[in-house]
Image (cartoon, rainbow, N blue to C red; front, top):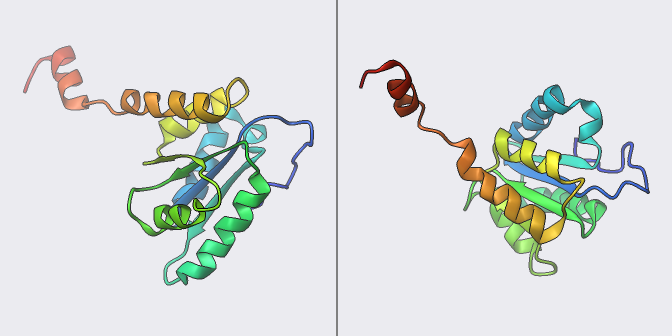
Length: 150
């Protein structure tokens, strides 16, 4: 899923979304998002997954190529702060600072897919980042209030 050009309509102005993760997490998130929004929502999306044992320089090359395909109107998600996908993005940011968020999750991806038709750049980044706390809920406390208990 690392090819943004597949099915890309030149008139499509939606923000591209690139997900950088360890293992197949990014691809799994995109497949899951298609269950919610349909396969058409995945146009202009890509996951660049770091495979076990992969040389970081090879990964850097794959990420660079994908970001070049994505262009300037692109939101990048990384799985975690400080990991290889994050550090790869930092290295590539010396040429161009991307719109990026660490801690990708299903709620964040769905928010980005939903809003990218209406927003781009800083506005989209801020909206997605702002939604991050809404997707994390202490279920124990919520259920305790609803049903009583601990």
